[in-house]
Image (tube, rainbow, N blue to C red):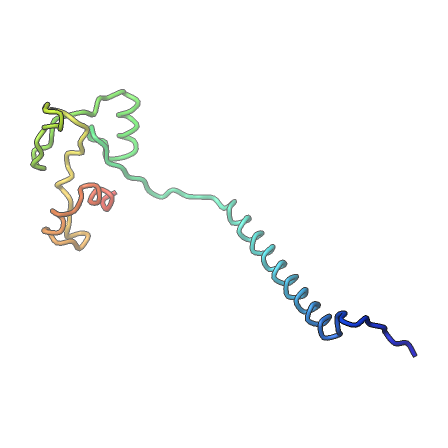
Length: 134
């Protein structure tokens, strides 16, 4: 009859079973992780569709084509201060500025469409209103 000889303090059968179970679990997790990586990498090759674009820039550019024309034609989009914002054209060095790059129709924001009260719309940053509209 063959007996296995184990050194004192060596791994027992229970330790070997635990180790084997841990290795099986790690191998299964590794396999699942590799499958997930393959799935994610294959999804990166899916086509992307741009279904809409919007922009608002000084010079009256309210769409990508108008903006491109503005840039391609070298149009100077600098103009006078908007009268509907209550700004003074005074800078902190004691001089006056008379022009800037402004989007002039920011006050035409349709607050009701977005469920915003007129009072709240007046308090909003114009950039936030433009973001909602575009």
